[in-house]
Length: 401
Image 1 (cartoon, rainbow, N blue to C red):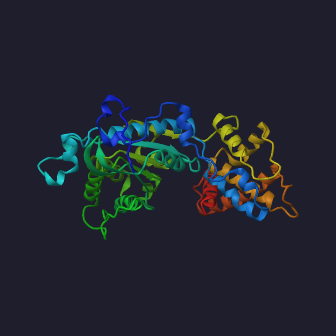
Image 2: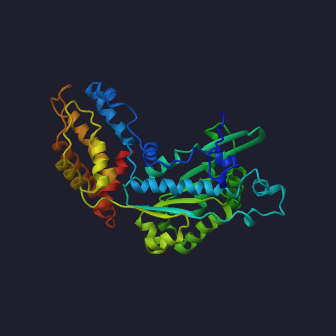
Image 3: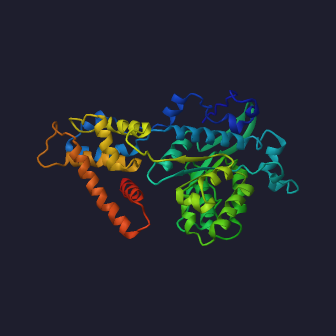
């Protein structure tokens, strides 16, 4: 693949192939929204053309629908700034960048002395608001692996790993997290036909040091660690876990993007304002709509309702949006689940015939009743769950089955 090195960069970034190989910086809000937005995997016309017993399966194409919000645009900007800033002190065309890459051959020089800790960005959201999907869309803007051969006529053979993403292990075991990070590196390279073995055969030795070496070898740009609330179950306690993450940023020298729930915020610092002060790259709250009049909820509901696979679509009105809010409690995953299930119920109705399938409010109410049963079962198993959390978990678990 030919790499297009763009010199349409801030003066600070010019002459750095690691940055110039990235997609251009997006300033226009409409363009960024379009880059992040994700529609159904298939056209509605193609889906509606199938017989009913096949069309029921097509409804799941709506699982992929994502509509970015103003806060997701701000997070995308912060992520882009963090990625590019992380590559400034590691420019391989400079002496420091060369030493950073080849420290093993010059042990007298330490990259820690010239490459500062790059900190972390934190995003907090209630369950079911799409924070994982949001970061997947943000990271998808960048190629994960870039293979350099030459830079402006000069041989430059370098594999660049722009980002990796992992889930926090259940139980919050830090050694498992390091193991998973090394596995994510091997997996990303293997997807591009590059065989590597950064993850050892056993969980022995200094995995942090191994991760640091991998990050230097590949000029790793970002690490996204999702669901950091899993650390709450760690036997090490918040001080040790916090110390581990600090050490991770100091030793590996890669910006961390952390996403978690309110539970994680309390675990790490006691409140969002503490998290905001502690996260050098920024801390962001993704909040649930408090009413149907919320502009973001209204836009999302109307956007979803524009994708109907029935023959006679349901008219979109403010009254319908209010009903959907009452049923979903403003949770994105629940709203999407209701929209998918309502259409499935409509298509499976007794004696329904192709060409006459209608979608009604009654179908949404039937879908909501079914979801309430599952949410109630989850609350019985875990009384600590709030009603909203139970609904979110019920919707998310079914969406991804």
